[in-house]
Each structure stands twice: as C-alpha cells, then as structure tokens.
Amino acid sequence: MSVMQTFFLQGSVSTLLSSHSSVTSCRKVSVKFAVSCCSAAYPMNVVVNGNVEKTPSDRNEVRLGLPSKGRMAADTLDLLKDCQLSVRQVNPRQYVAEIPQISNLEVWFQRPKDIVRKLVSGDLDLGIVGLDTVYEFGQIATTFTTLLLLLVSKICDVLRVKAKLHEKYACDLGIFVHAGLQNGDEDLIIVHDALDYGDCRLSLAIPKYGIFENVNSMKELAEMPQWTPERPLRVATGFTYMGPKFMKENGLKHVTFSTADGALEAAPAMGIADAIVDLVSSGTTLRENNLKEIEGGVIVQSQAVLVAGRKSLMQRKGVLDITHEMLERLEAHLRAVGQFTVTANMRGSSAEEVAERILSQTSLSGLQGPTISPVFCKRDGRVTADYFAIVICVPKKALYKSVQQLRAIGGSGVLISPLTYIFDEETPRWRQLLSTLGL
Image (cartoon, rainbow, N blue to C red; front, side, top):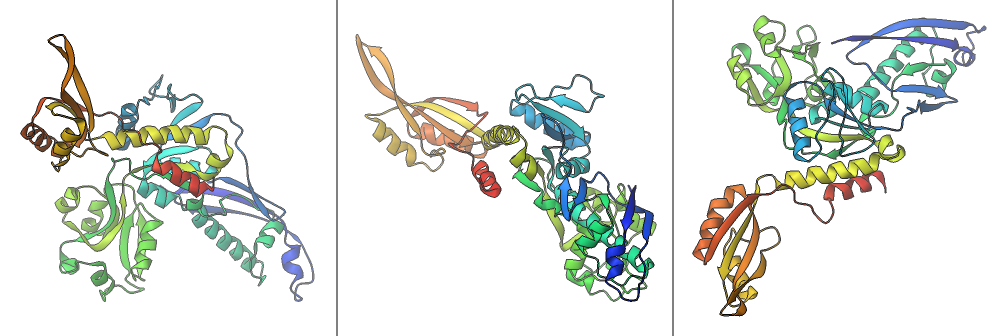
C-alpha cells in the first residue's frame, strides 16, 4: 500500500547561490512537496551542524515486536510458549502484552514490516519476523534517503542552480525529515537466523504457457528479445526493494514493477503483469495458476529470525541481558527438538567394558558419549553393582534403531522420554553477537 509522506523544507539557499558568479542576489525559499512511497514510519533524523542525530526515545522498558496476525503470529507464540516464555495478553484487542518470566519487557503486536521499521527507528528493541521482511524493509532508510536527495536536487534545478548537492547544502536548507542516512541493514543485527518455522522462499514466477513456455532459467528470461524500452517485462510484486535489485543483478534492464499485496498469482492471467515476485511455500498455488519457478529465480530462502536494533543493544539498559536470556532459551529448546533421552540397564564387569560395547554401535554415541553409572542393589545382605545404567541422547529418526542396538548388546528396561532443553556451556550465537558488537 502506498503511503503519502509530506515534508516541509524551509531555509536559506545563499550558500548554494554564492558559489555561482551568475547569481547576484540571495533570497529565502520555502518549498513544500509530497512524496509517495511504499513505506512509512521512518526514524526521525535531524541535521544539526552537519551531523545526523536520531531523536532518542525516552522509555525504560525493553520492547519486543511480534507479528500481530496470521500463521507467523500463531507459530511465534507457540515457540515462545515452548521456551517457557508465554505471552500474556489481558485484552485480545490490545496491541501490548507481557512475558511474565522476563521483567521490564513489553510485547508489541505489529505488522512484520512495521516491526522492522520500528527496529531501525529505535521504537522497538527486539523483533521476530521473516528473514525476507528484514531484507526488504531493513533497507528503507537508505532507499528513502536516496529518493529525498534526488528530489532536493530537482528543487535546485527548478531554482536554476547548477550545483552538486552535498550534505552541507542539505544543512543550509535546514531539512528536517523522516529518513535514515545510514544503511538500514547496518542498524539491524540478526541475533538468531534459524527459528525453524515460517519456511518459504521469495521467488520469481512466470507463466507456463505462451512466450514463456520454453523459458526455464533467469538467463533465458534475460535473453528474450521481447523486452525493450517500449515493451519492458512487467513484474507484479510487494517487494519493491529486493525485486528490482534482483532483476538488475541478473541482467534484466527493461523491467517495470507494479505494487500489489495479494493474489499476485492472478496478475499474469489478467494481463496485468508478465511475471510475479512473491513468497512461495509449497508451490501449489503457483502450479494451480499455471505459473512456474525457474532456475536461478529464488531471491532469498526465508524463515523466522530474531532481530535486534544495534543501538538498542549498545545503549538501552537491559536489552543485552534480555537478548541473552531469550537467545539461550531459544537455542536450548530448538536444539532439543526431535531429541530423546534413552535410559537402559546393562550387565557388565565395569563401566569401561559397558562403554566399549555401547560405542561399538553407530547409533548409541549420544551428544558427547554415553553416561554410565552403577546400579546398586542389595543381594544376600551385601550391596552389589551387577548392572550399569546408561543414558544417551538420540535423534527421533534414529530412535527405533537405537533401541534395537541397545537390546542386541544386552540392554533391558529401556526408558524413552522427549527432551525439552539442551543447554550448551555457552551459546555459540551469543559469542557471535558479542563479537559483532565489538564487546
């Protein structure tokens, strides 16, 4: 959806004019213009003495953004519940909630793209969204700033001033705008890149029929003679940053894009577009609408990720500690998914002899190896240890095979229970985050 943003520029252009001998007078100029773009909610930046300063947000609470609707929202709440981080929402109509297990943390339900925008602006500190959303809307700051500078340059042209626009001129114009002057992706850090749900891919799809019938790769699509400045390839998409970027990188010069949010699969059949760029899960909807993916046409493989604002991690009290706790809980739970604890009793002369038998079987090595301990019992008035208890961790796909191997080497009384968490000595992603932050 296109959102209209209005900006007001007012100030002296004397610095611009003084560098041109053909201009003999200076005057004040007030210009008001509107920009129609694909997104809003940019961070407020103010140019002060040539420096860009973001307006700080005066709050003490740490804010976590979660998807407000759809399958992604439900799966996110389920994951947090499995990590003992259940979200408590007093009123389902409210957009704010809490996680009682973590103090000083507010949960805000937002659209995924708004979560990314507010992470960039600092209105949120942490968020869970799809990786495709991060790549698309994490770039809005840079993209919008480029657009703004181009528009200001056009204003200078209107004033018949032939000067190269530099940042110092922007200061002289006294521009106060909603725009980020840093790369959006530099303001964001992906804390956990594989939350194991929301799997999909952003992909280009074309019709199976007509001029595309024998086109099966991006190379073949780019080489089609039909695409000219007068008749460009028409692409319908909601991804107005990644779509054009991908096409340019693949050598497609003559392309136009139309913005759409839903039912993109119908666009080629309606004659609105020649191709679409959209998220694909199973591909069933594409096939049912006579569309196909082509070789080299996948823009990004996506799934749910945990994202944080760099400045929040570095500057806002409590964000780093909460991120650490959430990361440890997520890592421990996700590592335990599909893993089972197998306990069995086994006769043996010593723990070493039992270990030798166990490690001779390919499915019984566990995470680092089996845990073996004596089983004591009282026999004829004496405490003896004729049996040893062994404990191993086994993945679900190897569970039955492991039980068979245990029984084959003398195991009995086999007990199986699912694992909830597997905590490492230290979470690798935590070390990586600290390294990224230079801490």
